[in-house]
Length: 232
Image (cartoon, rainbow, N blue to C red; front, side, top):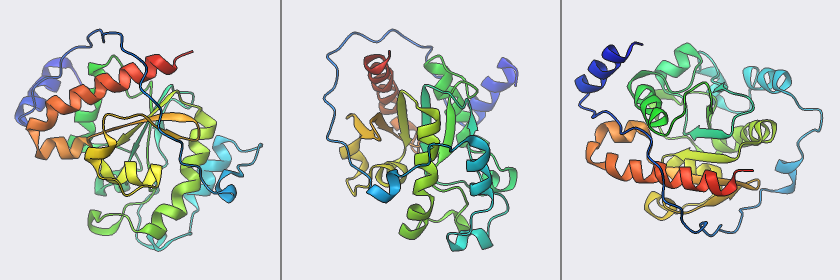
C-alpha cells in the first residue's frame, strides 16, 4: 500500500496518523512481577520440536469443537526469529477465511502502531491465543484456551522473543493465567516462560474508542523501554 493511500484509509476510519518513533527517556528498569509458572505437563516441550511439526499439529488440531466450525486455522505470521512477539485473542472472521492474523481495519491500525515504533509486520511474529475463530467472534471458552495453550508455548520457545506484547484483556488474561482486569495489567512487566510481557489495548478496541489512542501510545513507549531493558 503506498503512503498516500495508507493515509487516506486511516483518515477515512477517523484515525490520526501515528507519531514517528521518538526517543524514550532512560528510566529505571521496571520491576518484574513474579512469573506465573505453567504446569509441569505444559512445559514438557520436545527438544526436537520445529516449525513444520508445530504447523502440522495446529492445522490438524481436533482438541476442541472449534475444529468443526473453522474454515482455516490461523497459525501466525512474521519473523520466526523475531525479537517481538505479538499475541492477540483469537482470529476473526476475515482471519478465518484467509488463514492470516490481524487483517482488516484492526490489522491496518496494528501495522501503523508498529510503524510508529520503527517496526514492520515482517520483523515481528503475530499470533493469537486461539488458532481457530470462535463462532460469531464470541469470547473464547476456557477449554478452548487450554486446548491451544501448548501451541502458544511451543511458538514462544521456538521464537525465543525478547518481549511479548499481549493485545487486549482476553489475550493478556489467557496468556498470564489471571483474572486481573486490563487496567491492572497495563503499565507493568509480567513474564511468560521467562520472557517479559507488556499488555496494551487491542487495536480493534482502539477503533471503537479513539480517545484511548493516547494511552495506547504510552503503552507502546513502555514496551520499547522494556525491550531495551531486556535487550542483549
